[in-house]
Image (cartoon, rainbow, N blue to C red; front, side):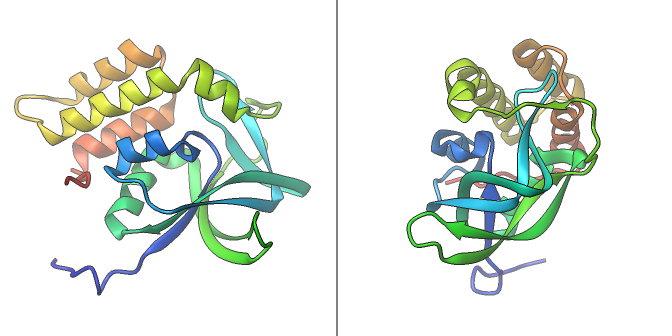
Length: 190
C-alpha cells in the first residue's frame, strides 16, 4: 500500500530508557528527531532483573523523567513497537514538558506484568550510558545491518548476534529479532 508523507500521521513517543540517548535513536531510526525533556506523572520506572533496560508501571505517587521523540512516522513507530516486543503495551499518556509545564498527549510503552517479581529499584540512565550503552549500540547496529543485507542469513544469525553481545538475551530482544526476521520490518534508510 502506498502512502505519501502527507497522508501519514506523525507520532510523539515518550521514552524513558535507552531511547533517551540520541545516538541510540539515530542508530534505530537513521535520524535524530526533535527531542523534548518531559515528566510522566502517575508512573514509576524500575530496573528489570537480568536486563539492560527499564520498565514503567502505573504508580499513583510516581513520576518518570524522560524524553519525547517528536514526529515519528508510522514506519518508525513500527520499528519501536518491534524493539519493545510483547512484554510492553503501547498506550496513550499525558506528559508535562520540563521547560514550560505544557501538557502533551503522547504514546509510551508500559510493562504489561505490573506484578512482575523481576522489577526492582530505580533504573539509572547515566549508569546505563557508562556501563551498557556501547554494547547495546553495537548489538542494535549489527541487527540492523543484518536486516538490511539478509542474503543467505537466517534467524540463527540474529540470535548469534544477540547472544555474543548480550549473553542470555531477554525475551523482548528475541521478540525484536524474530519480528525483524519474520515480519520483514524495514528500517528507514537515507
